[in-house]
Each structure stands twice: as C-alpha cells, then as structure tokens.
Length: 214
Image 1: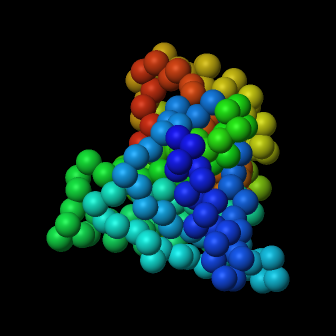
Image 2: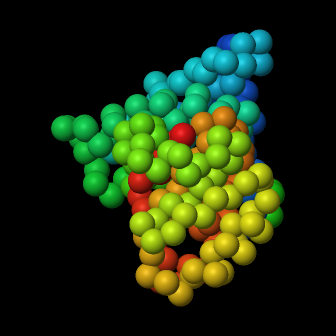
C-alpha cells in the first residue's frame, strides 16, 4: 500500500500551483489496497468556498479510479462532478475494462494510511428525479433519511447511533432501503455515514444502489 500512498502525495504536492486536498477520515476501512490505479481530484477553494474544481487529466478508463474529494465540499458541489466521472467510465465505448472499480480515497486513522470506499455501482440522483412523492416526509434540517415502501425512518443530526438504533428495530424485516442525503452535508460527513453503513450487519435489509440528494 505504501507505494500508492507516496504516489498520491507526489501528485498532490508536485504541482506548480501547490493545490492540496483534505481527505475525509475513517477508521478500519474494508479496502486498504488498490492496484492498477489512476486518480482524479476535486479541490475546495478556500477563497471561494462555493466553487469546486475537478482535475481528471490523469484518468485512464481501463484502470481502477481513485477519486480524491476534499472533505469540506458539500454534496451539492461534489456529486455533480462525481456523476460526470462515473458517466465517463460507464459510457466508454473503447478501451473499457468491466472489472475496473471506482473508490473514494480516505485517511484511515486506524492504520495511518489511505483507506478506500468503493462506489462503482452507486447511482446518484438529485431528489426531483424520482422521489418527489416522498419529499413531504423529509424535514429540510435532516442530514440523512432512510426510505422504504414499508416504512420511513428519519435520521436527524450527525449521531450515527440514531441510525443504528432505528435499524435494530427493523433489521429482521425483508426491506429494500434507499439512502437520501441532504445536499448541504459535507463530504466528510457523507463518508462517515457510508463507512459506518458498510460495517453494519443488516440481516435481511438491502441497500439500494440508488442514492438521492435532496
């Protein structure tokens, strides 16, 4: 893993413009090694916090992609750029590798090195594209909501224990859940939710590959 770690630092800091990225932090990543990679970067501009810059010059369609997103960006800023990258790989007609995956790069504090969260099969959708009928049940202040045809669970704040408590009451029911995230959530918080979800044992509950941003 160390060669990839050093390569990442070289790409970030050897640029003439000295741009840096603050990666989101996680613990105990399920993926700690990825080989045959190329990288893309989503930068946060401290002088213009509402702007986002995507650098994808070094991406090779047949490789695994490491997408490095600054943790300070909001989902409203980051997700459209991430969708562009996904569409580029999914729509590639030549030099395509169906086994190549996409990962978010993270700072895994448990190993003091990089960890990765896969998002190859995630399909991001803005809320108006499919869940309008349910919009009234989601308080605007909620950071995250879990939706299913059988039940609606509203999660408020950033305490993941609320999610775990709610899921324990339905974990034995055969449910398909959809994750919905507030567009104002930071990428740091989003990755925290995703990593914690990956660690959960959900029994008969399945999580949809569609994720909605509202």
